[in-house]
Amino acid sequence: MSTIAAIATPNAAGGIGIIRISGDEALTVADKCFKAYSGQKICEMKGYRASYGQIFEEDSPIDEAVVIVYRAPKSYTGENVCEICCHGGLYIMNKVLRLLFTLGAVPAEPGEFTKRAYLNGKMDLAQAESVMNIISASGDAALNAARNTLKGNVSRKIGEISSALITAAAGLAVWADYPDEDIPAVQTGELRKTLVRAKEEITRLILRYDSGKAVTEGVNTVICGKPNVGKSTLMNVLSGCSRSIVTAVAGTTRDVVEETVRVGDIVLRLADTAGIHETPDEVESIGVKMALERMESADLILAVFDVSRELDKEDYSLLESCKDKRCLGIVNKSDMEAKFTQEEIEKYIKECITLSAKNEESFEKIKEKLEKILGTEGLDFTQEILAAERQYNCAKKARECIEEAIYALDSGITADAVNVSIDGAIEELLTLTGKKAKEEIVNEVFSKFCVGK
Ligand code: GDP
Image (cartoon, rainbow, N blue to C red; front, side, top):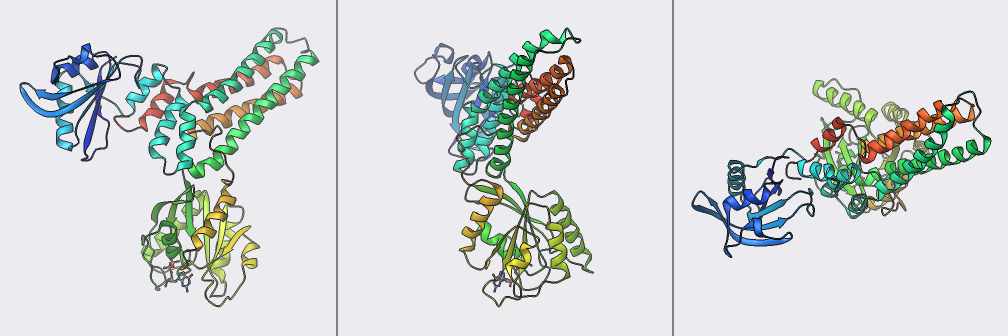
């Protein structure tokens, strides 16, 4: 395996910059450019030790640095690793990195350090994905969820479910060889119980992911409503700054303004759209089209209505498009004389609130409602929570296979057919944790990482 190097700290100036080297030659490469003030060679150092000295390019010192040594297998990647902590200027970090390339290291691919950790059995795929979630966590709940996955609680749970299925499949294999004989009733009963239990446990993971996603990944949210109902004002209340242009002239928000905001533990990826209405303005009508498309693909719609004006055709057409969608109806401008009541909106949208976007207390009201709609109230982040959409899809496919197996068992189809479905479920679970993931899947997972991680 080659020896790789990359800057592990952000691609920006900072107090300290860390350049990471990993591979068989990591310590020798570091020795070729680093001279410790103590005179000790990096190759002679034990793991978990640091050395203070200078980095040399040929005979000229280019920076002072501390080098931390990790010895295989007790390192992040499981290989020999050196972390050169030098001054955090972009120029100096890149100069040290280029120097390492001339001394035998090669540039690390995105996520290659973590990929090596996976390949060396330091963590499985579910844990590797949680590393990214730790980096991108924007609140305590998201951080706790990611930390628990990194500790391996999802992997353990999936391991338990797949072990039970493997045992069941092995028991059944005996009967698969004798398709003409019925599987004994005792065995069918036990097997059915195992399958139902596995299905329930996977369902719990799937449901928790749906709610947990609001915290860990963010909810794709769109704010809709006629021009001037107060969408931008509301977005500004949520984001705590004047991001959208707020004016009293209808149709100021022409394109889609995006913002990620945290409402309590919930992360909303908010798009403030042009109001949905008929318009002769060409630019504006593109905005309206985008708004409708956004609504179709959104996980959550915040539909805003202005209580100071009678509901009209456009309001009703928005209400119609909100039916059967996850939606919060917001009756805005409660400080003004009301021309309709919240009950009218509730005929179309189950969850509604009346507020004034100009009042900062509205934030709390929205937060409580969102927790209810998104199911994050009382969500326990110390429980297993799947760390990525990929894991979620594997869990859903595994559940489908188990449902097929239960159906096959109940309809008295051959043991062979039941086993094919159980094997399908096991395959999906092993892909989830990466115990048996195809190379393309592994590459896809790590391609989403940053260089240096
Ligand atoms: P948008 O076109 O839906 O984005 O609406 P804006 O957020 O630009 O708001 C339109 C106008 O309504 C602005 O003048 C806001 O100040 C005003 N407005 C928004 N929310 C409220 C509210 O709760 N009460 C009152 N009285 N005015 C509001």
